[in-house]
Length: 142
Figure 1 (cartoon, one colour):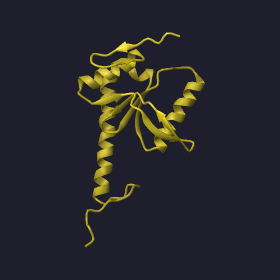
Figure 2 (spheres, rainbow, N blue to C red; figure 1 turned 90 degrees about the vertical axis):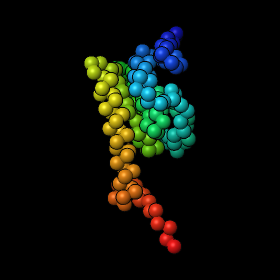
Figure 3 (tube, one colour; figure 1 turned 135 degrees about the vertical axis):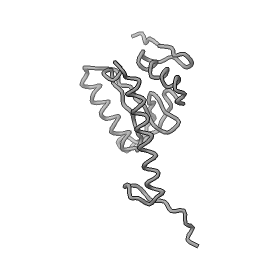
Figure 4 (cartoon, rainbow, N blue to C red; figure 1 turned 45 degrees about the horizontal axis):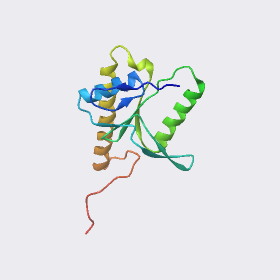
């Protein structure tokens, strides 16, 4: 099998045209990312090294799931997203259906919404609002 590589304007070869288009859009808006950054996850009690398509400097992962029609691929995709969630990674998942029409605006809105959610969670924690996560205090207690 020959793996075709698609080049972006400024980076490494990508595995598909949509992956290249995503990278070009991130570059266009100066959104820093690392392509296929090695990322440790715990899956079924074992630490594994995965390579998400994009890791934003803000800790958000972006995965493009480009194969349609295969039940095995759908099962692996579902498992991957579940493991990311269990490991407390926020993932923006994209599929071929997401890459048409005004996909760029929708994708940028998803990034914005994800980051806004993280910021609101942080603000809630520092304000002492219960968010289901630990609350931090700035008082030293002395």
